[in-house]
Length: 268
Ligand SMILES: Cc1cc2nc3c(=O)[nH]c(=O)nc-3n(C[C@H](O)[C@H](O)[C@H](O)COP(=O)(O)OP(=O)(O)OC[C@H]3O[C@@H](n4cnc5c(N)ncnc54)[C@H](O)[C@@H]3O)c2cc1C
Image: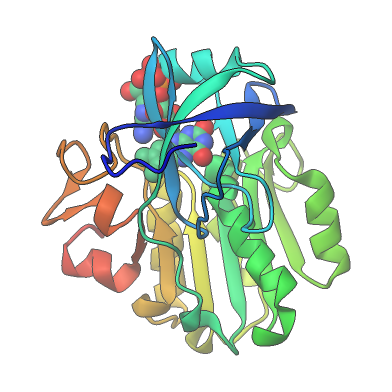
């Protein structure tokens, strides 16, 4: 793959593997020809020739081939779902700000995932799982539709390693119809000193808002509450203006923001 200096020109990558993760959700891995190092929280712009380009979070860890987990929701993601091993795509990136880990070192950590929010949080959880000695107790609150639960086998491994996983599943007795949104309702099950812990959140916007408020109410300082925002964007590099949020762009200033940063720009 050629290392382009023009940020608008995608490099060509080859689909290596396609795995069904859930109805309408597939995990694609790519052969990129050259290493494309990325950090948890960053995203790629992936294009299907003749269809268009969309931003997708990186779900692979730094040790794995590039992996993007994609839900079919419309035109471009529909075209991506038609891809087979050997097909070519365009990739630009990685873009965006990564999740900070210095805020969590030596502290208990709460990871709150709502639905597809688990996609960018997977490499975050791997950081805690692989470097367990650097962090305190890790708890995951995962709210989702039961048939859209991602990374089941890995979750088993995480639980065996001592990570506490608390589910808010739609379609299971534990919760009502809004599994994703209800993840924050299970915070009372997390045993920690919230004022000393750190949290990583990703999911639908209402779930993020509710989670941040609940964590702050329990004493967690906003600078240790981190989230990743989704916004419509076309370029990914701070030019098109689609993801403009107050004085900031979600693509280049985010997509990862701390709660205190969002409060300063009056997003929450
Ligand atoms: C930083 C970032 C990371 C993302 N990571 C992932 C990921 O890891 N996996 C994944 O499956 N998706 C992810 N998305 C969402 C993905 O980019 C959209 O689903 C995709 O752009 C839809 O394109 P489409 O052409 O298939 O849909 P369209 O045909 O363009 O639209 C279908 C419907 O979806 C709505 N829609 C499209 N994009 C968005 C959006 N960003 N927010 C809210 N509604 C939208 C449209 O309004 C329309 O109603 C991410 C988005 C961003 C901004």
